[in-house]
Image (cartoon, rainbow, N blue to C red; front, top):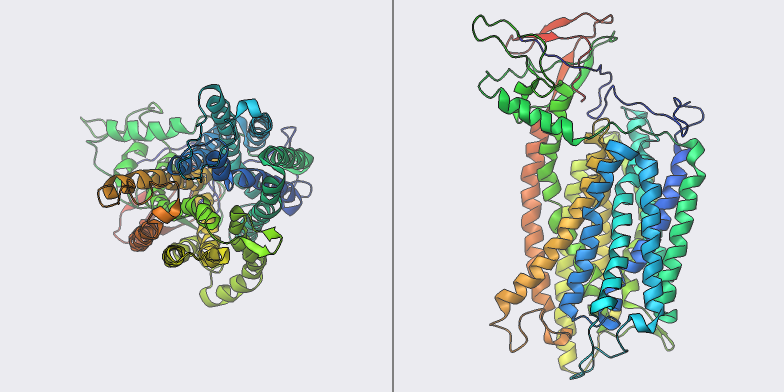
Length: 609
């Protein structure tokens, strides 16, 4: 029998529950459930979700047109500038999650970085409006015409403005999701359903924002100029900040817990320090709070990376085997801290499996927009569809499909599976990862058809590329929401925003991988391309082999799906449920596991799961 020491109590049966969860109002006073939290508070967060998405989507989804057509960067470089920008937005979500959980809290992080993002939109609008801050007008598509590429001060202003937007949006995104979800109590039954419904509502808000951006705002950019378009994005962002501030009296706020990196570092240091100590049994490390429990409780814990369990086991005197006295926090950690590190390690493979999914998203925001530009954009005699607005097609479908999913699909699946949310987040992610392969198959087939038609002097209608957007939209409804719900539910108290930011970090790596793939494909195919330097090296898609690039992505996506199946099963097998008897009062209790190993359930201890 080994003694396990920890500092806080734990109640409840959720993987994410923790005794450290405390909510306060904007004045720092304990929340009143009748006045704070719930959907009445979350609706203000959904407001900034929609308006911020309108602002950033209007810029990001049509940015390649501005970079290529007005800043005069080559097409492949323009695609990489866009993917690097979007990748940076999502990578900086880690910074936003860290600052929120450690020092600022979700609300203040959103408010501060919302104004940073707003300043970036304003600077972009100023540059797009003043001709002296841009290269002279030039047609990049005209054969043989050498256009002046933006450089020096012009390029510097552009990139400063762009990355102010990236910094603000990146730090904002994970906190919007986490702060909205914090308005709901986390537990089983009805709480789980309400939280899942919130995630669907957040995705619906996201879809509405994207839809307005890709129709109204992109149309404004195309008809009135990018300067007006960037200015409208700034105005929309300002409205989002007003929505955020308007709900301040209703929010449940999770106070920052101090640096979230220190407890993680302590676990590794303690485990390495005690590396020669015998690894405790599975049952031994099952120490949880029993101080005020009066009923049996089911606790789920991670059974992988068991070498880390040594960090929460008291050292023994080498001579007599007696337990040593009080140990440093760098040598003895709480079971909650150990489990927190295990959760982070276990979700990494799931996170990695979504990177290829977001690489496909990168193509829809770059090459597919240029693909549409090379097609017949006429909807009527006098109206042309902006190519960037094609990305609105899936969101038109999703605005109707997401409520139907919540109202019909979830209850039907709940009756079949017994799962409160219909299907589990891991199952939801898997459905999306499988479906997205067919988006690239459709894209490859249409691009091959477009190339063959162009050889004969015919131009294919732009609506031929609608299927690739529709299939991706359907797959995103499953994968994106499932991933956010999965990460949030695995988070422990004080790490909600940071772990949620891993969802957006997946987007970042996907866009960076897209840039690497474009450069790598050009390098590998340069010798086989007839003077064009590779499949994607030309400024005109008729001279490229975008169809072959799409087939490559389809193959990678299918392989990635089978890889995900392996890691999803691995993760499911890493979580086990252990029954612990409550001992209301503060004493300890000893239970036997299936192997008969005694366990001291120390009062006032916590696994945090």
